Image 1: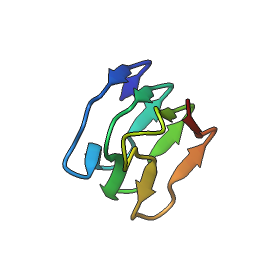
Image 2: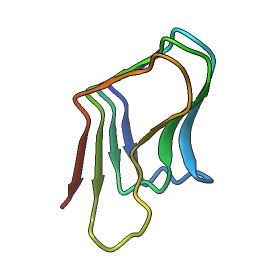
Image 3: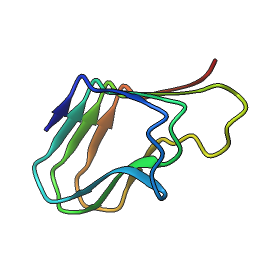
Image 4: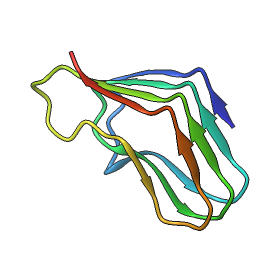
Length: 82
């Protein structure tokens, strides 16, 4: 579980966080000007909610959420350019 994290310019190689298991919760994290995505590639029944991705409008490829699994629950996601 990753809760209430504040991530500033946390650039990944396409992925900031890569979930590869089941029954994981990623909630209420803020990603500021971070290149990459929150990715769930393997596993099932994961929950992703309340995460915010914000960019400065200059840096390209500021991320979002990617899921490749069965039964993901992704809610209350916010994307913004500030």
